[in-house]
Length: 342
Ligand code: TYM
Image (cartoon, rainbow, N blue to C red; front, top):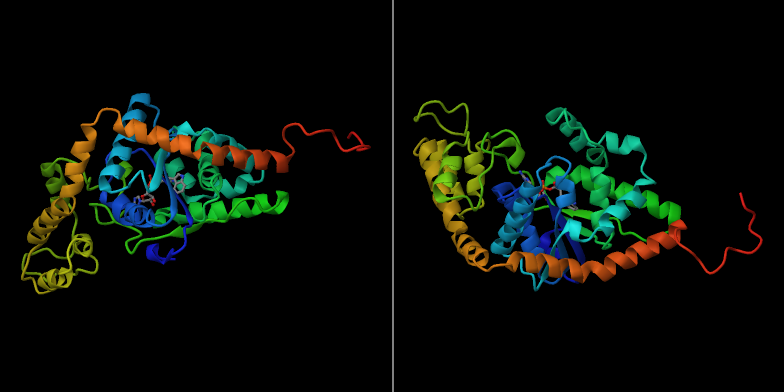
């Protein structure tokens, strides 16, 4: 499904880790769709601070980064009158549902998740239990509001596939309560980082941060790796494999002319990077102003997050009630007469 194809109001959910300032990967891979899909749908966007605890154990950092990410999303155009924005830990029902769903999840399913394997490699001294169950909590985030569409980058595809399997397994055992979610991608589902090889990611330190000071953004962009086979200024470039050229596709409609300049060596990599920096700064200048305005309103972000969590309370509680009932938790009028105790 494309973002614009959703004509009737549909339930949309997505989550983002509180990793601080949003970067171009977040925006081009996912946030653009959050903003497009808030029109005419019931959209819920969550800052997943529980998830962040799998890798960050600094309370102050989690709090600050949660604020930063929420502020960034609002500045980029997420509208609290159209979409619900909230903090995961303000709705602890997510954690309970994750536990309940985990009872139908074979350990082998979570052990083979690519992100778990990756974390075992990148944080070998902190392979905590919550890392293993990370995708189950992610499933609960979506399932608790019975959301169907999930705008995400391609790096989340395996988590979404697992979410579908978990929900299917639970529904088969207890009855069709939950909806199988579908990922929704943009036309840039994997944005590469400044190294030109790996996906752009805060933890890899290869980001272009949308709200960093201007000189930092310029530095991040000029540090980008381009076509590694283009050694001399006179060598022809290959825009198809140059990350800077690829990013130009999203910042102006003349990217083919820019690509042609590279191919014919009329322009050099430095020119193309400078132009990209100007365009990125231009594209986000309004958002940067809005961010400054919102940041100057004391308590605004906190108010939005709290109100969002409040709005979701009835839905979260109702789903848990239904889940308890199906799973045999809580009291009932009377045990079925004559049922043998075993
Ligand atoms: P997170 O915080 O890593 O990223 C937030 C969103 O940004 C997308 N993204 C990218 N897309 C393309 N190219 C990139 N280089 C890039 N970097 C980030 C991600 O795909 C994501 O959509 N596990 C999730 C958070 C989560 C969630 C959920 C998502 C928790 N519960 C429920 C959807 C539904 C994560 O860590 O995203």
